Amino acid sequence: SLRRPVAILQDLPGPKLRVGKLASDPMHLRRLDTITLTTKPSKAKGKIPVAYPDLPKAVRKGDMVYLADGSIRLEVLRTTRDEVEARVLVGGDLVSGKGLNLPRLRTRVPAITREDREHLHFGLENNLDIVAVSFVQRAEDIRMARRVAEEKGREIFVVAKIEKKEAVEDLEEIVKEADGVMVARGDLGVELSLERIPIVQKRIIFEANRSAKPVITATQMLESMISSPSPTRAEVTDIANAIIDGSDALMLSEETAIGGYPVEAVRVLQKVAQETERYLPKEITQQRRMWHENSQEDAIAFAACETALQISAAAIVTPTRTGKTARRVSKYRPPLPIVALTSHADVEKQLLLSWGVQTVRREIESTDTIFTEAEKTVQRLKLARKGNTIVIVSGDPKGPMGRTDLLKIQRVR
Image (cartoon, rainbow, N blue to C red):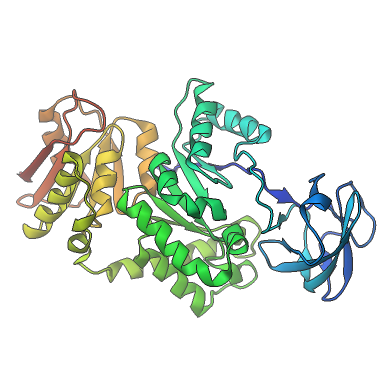
């Protein structure tokens, strides 16, 4: 009914430790209160159930326990067989289902749990477009997600959520294996010291940009708008800086899931993003020229951007079967529209994650079809008119998938 493509992303929960059902919801934790974390279901006052039987073995006196993305902090006082007694250092309102982090815990837990397999099978049955894998620690976790999809005879577009210390340490390999990445700042801000988050965020974005993989920046983008109709100045600046760093997409969480002003939050995000992109430096394509890999495909994508700038082209058109050509062009951030023509519905939606790309469903059967459809499409979208020039970058429609070997300057007739 929207008359435009919309991608649906499935966010797998992963092996995250979570608070169980609380006796009072929310439960107010006051500073210096003594509370009990229990591995058994409980509705007793002052007890917080946690579905992790080994919790008492995983902590010791003096350890920190973080709840709700670190907004509530506890210090372990003592442990018993089934319980952990702790003192509240930073209080707040805790609701059922919130996350629990143990920064000292370094056990190797598979990122794809049995529950995740069931969720992923459901997603595949319902043709979801993108799958985000939580708590990725190494590239093998991404391969595991692909194998689960292959059990159902399907391929998936995988976004790796970077929220573990181990993932930061293995970042380059994870970026190579995944189709996209997410800077999941909530759990990452508990796994790492807070002062490291801005630099780690920039590094994740840089690695994704350099590899032509879309990158999503998420968590607390507009946290204050959960309860306020307007954002803080710091939040607006955070949005702008994430875009300037190179984010392809920004994601809201609680702001739209449980917040009182979901539509207003989306509107603020859109307005700040549009205003920021007006001021992205036009030299960015040249600044990124050193990023191009020693491949024919990347060289042609960069040449297309540089050529389009030099001749003041109205748009770059990229017919694509896999989306790779459009992503390579997007990598260089040309300050003009990128139009991706594809006959594949999944590619059409997945490309919505990539910066500056507009997608259009078109059947491309031959090289001649590429030229005629490119011209018709830019005119239909009102991106170019008669006499304007467009740059077309593509592969042979009948050649190998993912190959880019054609660059053409075309005047619109």
